[in-house]
Image (cartoon, rainbow, N blue to C red; front, side, top):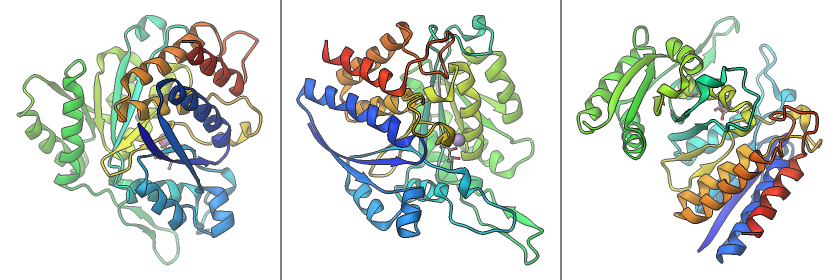
Length: 354
Ligand code: IPM
Ligand code: MN
């Protein structure tokens, strides 16, 4: 197969984790006779510095013509909003990219690897944890009208959802649960929020067409607690943009590090694959960042392309690296962490040797 892939290194540790990911994808494509053509594109801080725009038009154009987008991570504390100071941020670029590509469905699998001993949660509770978060990605409070009054002392962010926006991700989440353990949990705050009431109405209605799926409901505050108290109860979690953002960082505690979590975003023409974590600016250039979230996002891309064998081999290689203690410092529990490159090289070599 031939594929055109837009690659955005992004900020902070982005270039380091992406280099390992491409290295590994190259050994997969070589083995299976595929051709991936990579188009390296600007977004984030570099893009702001060079063009004043965190997601230049050229990046959007090439992304929209590609078969997939691979993204490292976006953000930098230097661009943190100071009070009353309006400034373009790297994050604006990421949000625009998701919105312009119409990627309304963000899929974040949470899997526990027993060989990683870094979760503060009791190990008994972690056995059999395997769930996936379906996070709505182009609506809600992230994209509603926002602003300040003249004095700047009043601010607002509107949370808006339409029936259609809920239905389209709802259908995908039900379909996903059918090929899993057939359990769907809608997380909302429908005891308070009008948007959440609409989410419930719409999802209950869709549920009638999926009688084999057990649908249940949790308020976000309770869900945040249950993810720690009883994480194996979850199969598919469906939720809005803001709640999904928060729950996915919380869920990473199960895996021992947010560096472990991959994601895919679908819905529009070009899917996007990016790790869940941020740009970890303190680690930039130090060769210490965990590349697995990014590498596993690459494996979600292979699955999206229908390259199932390829995806399985990549994930087997990741499991071997973990079993053999090739850990970056965030998931390492002894005194001898591997580097970002060590992890990439181990996985590449494992694939080459199969
Ligand atoms: C994520 C990130 C982004 C988000 C930020 C960087 C804008 O936290 O992908 O979870 O809030 O969606
Ligand atoms: Mn987040």
